[in-house]
Length: 280
Image (tube, rainbow, N blue to C red):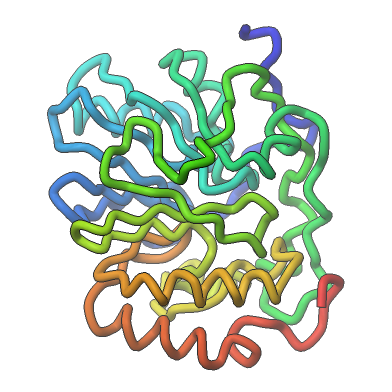
């Protein structure tokens, strides 16, 4: 199986970080968010348990950090039951191949992400012309060639269930990518939003570095369908989440989440959709 696995030729370490890099936050007893440079991974499962799942796979070159974090939380030589991806952009699959080889666990993603994860199709080029800050201008350096996970990646079940994550369901939230998904647990209204919305202005270098909190739309430079992205945010607001972990920025809960998400939905065309860019 290992011979099938490969990153695109443009995969490389990205020298970008924030003040939150290396910081972990316990969002619920079994939900732990950890920042790797500028992106979050999420571990779901009680500490010291052998029943846990990794959501997303960090930045290129971060495998050792993710393995160390996992063993610190769940014990030496621990491994998740599965890795489940919100989508396949480089900062969410950066360490996926090393983790598959180390853990020998299955990976799940939405059916529409499969071409980007099995070497068939590259994502659209990052849009450096989009309205935004310095990160948007830097985006041509970001990898966008498809990776090939071969038979290690499987489509999520069509019934909305999440493998190895009882209580959670997956929700199709396209816009940022065709097969982007979020995860929701009705019991405590816990939302793992991925990049459907985020809590930092990701195109602004200053705000990425300082992690200034504000509920915002998906990263502009990689979002290609803004109307779908708006509909996805509406879908998530209608779940009335109590807490949310996003792909970028700090977790958020309570009234700031409720009011911030409502403001984003009501003003998505002003707050999220750029005035100009290749995908407008």
